[in-house]
Structures are given as structure tokens and as C-alpha cells.
Image (cartoon, rainbow, N blue to C red; front, top):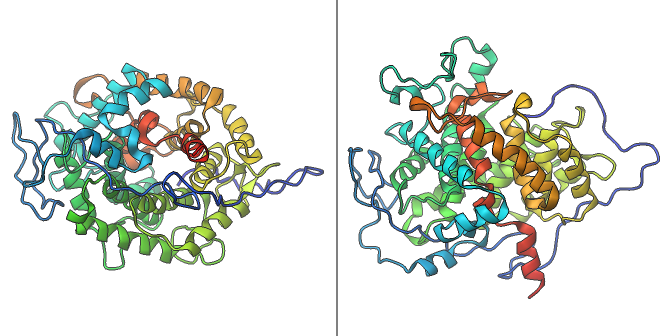
Length: 474
């Protein structure tokens, strides 16, 4: 879906280049005793109560509890009846370490520490409010139909008046690729709420999140597939992103024993991903049996990683194949660069996605491949004239994990750009116009969800090298 696809072959190292160090799996213990790059898998927590969640129409994922249609004005908190209140500190400590910075007590501190501002945090909240206003009652978001929630005369449009959500003047191939990708768009929106620390159990957006989870589960087929009606080119993207979102939701749940539906859905989604993995290359693509591409790989990896963080198991064979894929598909002098497919040119987007994938798999910060990738990405910082939210999303995740001056320079460019380009007018306030090469595929929902995820980077995941350093010092 993303990355350069020019059929120019630049694979291999330059003549006379030194032999590159092969990326290998880490075999050291993590803070709670897990191995092989698997982060802690503890019981996640619920967020503190707030007085204004929004009840919805779908069957709740919380043990089948019925919920009401949305009503205006103040609303009661959407928490499960009969669940005793848990002290905030205890709830926060029960979160997997990966998600711990998302808690209300840590989020603001983390944003300030790692490069966020009051303006960037305000932008996140404006965005989530916009997404909540444009969610369908059954829980999903629709890249083409979200404007049905806009009041008369205030349809979300760009300043020139052209609607930016499924216009008939989009290229036909674009319309076909994103037309039925609602499961992917819904999952990206769900990830944005989860990334800010909101959950389906408690909080301001408990009902929006709960309905999104319910809708995604309702789309799951007997095979475990979550891609709903997505077309050939979007099917596996949609499945992976939906699996990723459901796994995060389950990982952040306070009491996993009370929600078998969500756990079962994630487990079935994991089985489907494993079944689609190429048995020789370790990659994924549009259909089973294809050797795989780097763009598809990152989403599948994060779905499996998030499931494992939540406590579900992933076959060792599948993990071994993932390491094999990133090893064999890496390019550059030190194997720090990447392309969409082996015969194509190295691109910033695929290098960023590959670097973040390697970080999730445990590559050391000072590995030559890490340094090569960061040096390359540092020369291609975000700028408005070259908007590419897909690239910015993976670049932001990877550069944040790497840290240091490289991260500060990247963040200074991206954060201010996103804050400045967020819509501040009318019913579109809080959203981002769908610019760049992939904006027309997912429209305003896609651009808003990805922009929000970029601005949540300061607390969405714990910096992995800090986590590893803590483990090593014990």
C-alpha cells in the first residue's frame, strides 16, 4: 500500500563494502522473565472513571450487557455493573509495561518529557472528539459515508469546498482499493483512542470504543478473517490492522477473565495471520502463497506482537520466519535500508517500517543497521510539500524508539507541522485533510487517525531501549 514501487533494481551492497552484521534474535531476559523480545504480559488496567461517556446501540463487548442509543447531554459512566472499583495505582501497575505511559497520571508527563506540547495534546483531544462525532451507530467508521454525521450546510470539506471523502473524481483504482476498507479504517480510529489511554471499560469514550470493538468482532468470518468486504489489495491490510486494534484493546483490559469474546476474536485473528504467512520467506502479501512485501509485513508483525503483549501465544516458527524476512529483505551497506519488494528501489517509507519492525523484534540501538536507517531517514524529515502520512507514521515510531538528537530533529518537524495543519474551522475542526499519496484511499478518517497516532507517540509505547536498560540493570 505504501512505498516506492519503481522497478529499479538496487539490491545488494556496494562493491568492496564490508560484510554487514546480520540481525539476530535477542536471547536475554526481559523485566518479568520473558524472552526473545517479548515484552511483559501482565493483566492490563482500566482507566479512571469520568462522568461523560456516550452510550451506544450495539451489543456491548462487556459480557453481553445491553446499551442504549446515544442521547444528548450528560451521560452516566459506561462501566460494567458489579465490578468493584480498583485503586488507580493498582490499575496502572497492572498494565503491560509497553502501554504504561498511556495512563492519565503518566500521559502528560511523558508528552512533556519526550517532545510533546500543550498544543499537540490539545490536537489529540480535538481529533478524538471529531472521530467520535463521525462514528456510525453500529460502531464503524466509513471513509465514504462519514459525512452523514455532518449537520446541514457544514459538511466536512477542504477550504476550497471540495469534499474529501470518496469523491467520484478520484481515480477508479483508488476507489476500488479503499471503497470497502471500513474494517481497516475503523481499526485505525480505534487505535487512536487506545493510544491516548481510553478503553472500552471506563472513560469518556468507553462507548465509542466498545461499539467499534463489537463491530469489528461482528465482521469476523469463520476462518478468523477480519477484513470484512475489503477488496483484494486491502484485504490483508484490513485484517492485520483490525487484529492489531483488537489485541491492543484486549491488552489494555483490566480483567481479561470477563471478556471471552474479545480474547477469542484475537486468538482466531492470530491463527489467520499465521496461516497466511509464506512458509519459506516469512512474509505476507495480498493472498496466501505470495512471498510478501515490506509494507504488508509491518502491520502483520504488530498484530502478532500486540497479541503476545496481551498474553496470547504466537508460534515460535512464525516468529523465526519474521526474523528471516527482515534479514533477507534488508538492503544497504549495513542492511539498514529497505524497499517495498526486492526488485524495487530503497524508499524512506519502507526503511522506516523495516526499522520499526526490527526494533519490535529486538535489534540493538547501536546496531549498524539501526544507525544506517536513522541516518537515511534524518535526511528525509517531514515537510508539507511532501506529505505522506504513512511514511510519517512509521518514521515517527522508529525515530522515537531510536531517540537522541535524531528524534528531536524529526519530532520538531513533524509535531509543529501536524498541529499547524489540523482543521480549526466548522464541523471539520479536529480533523486533517487527506493529502499525500494515500489520502484518497482512506479519506479524512484515515488522515485524521494516522495524524493522531503520530501525535500520541510520546506515550503510546514505552521507549524499548529504556525498558531493555532497566532489565539489564537488574
